[in-house]
Image (cartoon, rainbow, N blue to C red; front, side, top):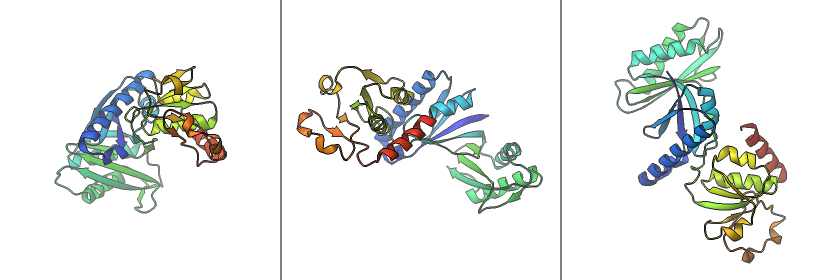
Amino acid sequence: MSIILVRYSEIGLKSKPVRKRFEAQLKENMMSMLIRDGTEALITSDESRFYVRTENIDAAVRSVRKVFGVASLSVAETCGSDMNEICETAAKYSSAILKNGQSFAVRARREGTHPYTSMELAKEAGSSIFLANDGVKVDLTGPDVVFYIEVRNNKAFVFNTYVRAHAGLPLGSQGRVAAEVDSDRGLLSAWLMMKRGCKVIVYGTHGTDVLSAFDPSLKIVKENVEDRYQKDVLGYVLGTSIDELKDINVSDHPVPLYFPTIGMSDNEVSMMLDVIRSEI
């Protein structure tokens, strides 16, 4: 059975109580994104991993990788933690991926107590893959295909691809800010604050379709957010360049100001937005 194995990174550095709170927020955000995108799925978790079960794997991958806090994900085949069962699953899985003449390697890791080491598992699984495919060879330094095996207690997961996501912190875990979005720089500034876990109230309409793709409940207002929401936000986000900073009078603003893109050139802003838009 195929599932989506979801990993986080920065959340794992937090204390146990904070980590549990962030994990709950991350799970809620993944469900909200899946619901918004119309994909039915079941999400479970176990020791720093989330597992997404769905009949529409491709759609779920597209949704989950947009969720801030997710570092990477993999579509994996699951089986029990018995060595023979893992080897059988790995051999079957590899047959649909390896082509004649290609080289491969196996990388294995374990969580929990098992009657084999990670190196022994990689060796046995590699042997099974080799015997199941004609014309392939083992190359541990520069293989054409790498097969990964994660054993977590009584379950094992076999996959060959890491899909990178944006990492960061779960949206909503770091409070709320207001952002003026009237240019590409303002748009990227708001997005970067979202990546750091802030819910953003948006003032402006420039590229808000991009922000909405990453926040199913994005709030867009027409009035001056700094005046109306100053008691409800932790700060005001501006798309200000280093050359424009001299025109900002901090004393004119009732809340702290944030300039996420102040150290970036216009070209860097444009390139980063091109990447973000390509992933929506």
